Length: 306
Image 1 (tube, one colour):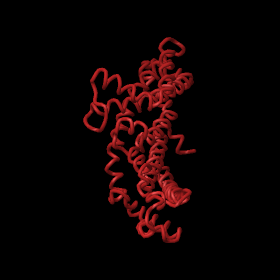
Image 2: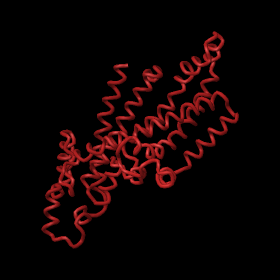
Image 3: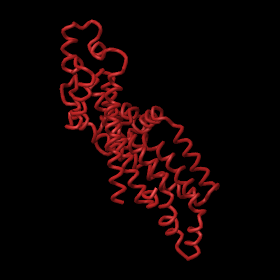
Image 4: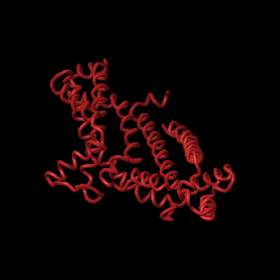
């Protein structure tokens, strides 16, 4: 297990280096002069030259790349043009809000997906199975930009039960968590059902039942654990999506997370902030995938030998 983790960590270093390189050149190869875009066509040449010098755009591209990589290694992602604060400081300020929303959405998704997925697999093609599958299709089909305002209209405006927007207490977290977690719960419940159905037909499950083991123990200890590999894949990918910023949901509920910060950077043409947000989001994805791979190896030891 230790050697497997070491191999994955070494691979992570190369992947992160590729991410840093891709983010740098992606921003620099966007058509147009970023200084002209940020200051407008009517800015004075002296102002343009000053901003170009501040951003280091007057130096050769390879020198800029070397300085950027050096800065990333030391935690320096640049300075926000509008606030004059460091990009890393602004990102770290927003990251707890994204993490809070991720935990809330993941909790909603798991609380819905596991009971419905397991029950649907135990009674396949029955009434409960049909109802849960219909609900899952409905959950996947409902986009966040439609579900979020619908929840606001019903629970905040009509019933006046929950606040509409901004980050605060637990009551502020409920509606955005439901908005984000619904689609994920739908995907997870379908995945749990199909994976568990496949495992329940295996020979070792029949042997476990023949030995007289309780059905609950057969399902939870033997069948469910072996059915978790594809489920872990979905959970790992969705954690990356949720933690790195659900832009639409954060915009609807005025949630101060990474997604809204990235949107602000794009709207204000704040290139250093956009570059830093994209780099952090990509890094989160890579790290979450590493954790997912390690979880694979823990759940199924055969993964380490492949």
